[in-house]
Length: 106
Image 1 (cartoon, rainbow, N blue to C red):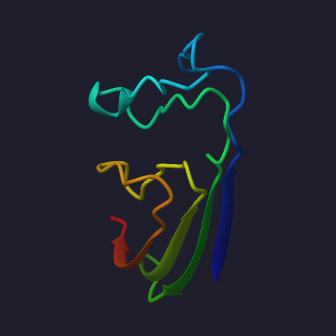
Image 2 (tube, rainbow, N blue to C red):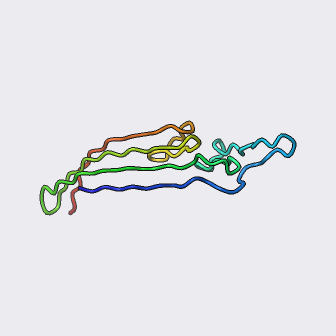
């Protein structure tokens, strides 16, 4: 049995552009620029993410093992972390996945 926990804390600082007249955060909208999951929100927070995972490993032989696992990703209201990193979900969307695998070494 294996388990894991990973946490990304809230962002801080002033990444983003604050309008000097209205005081509103422009946020820089980096989601369409190929820059990954960096989102500027002028340090407003709500960008914490937590990843919980559990895995059962069965050792079938000296060279072969079977794995069954579950993972749950919890995003705060402004966080956009994703499982696998291939998509960028809307802010605050949680994700989960179930996996089965077999490993053989030669």
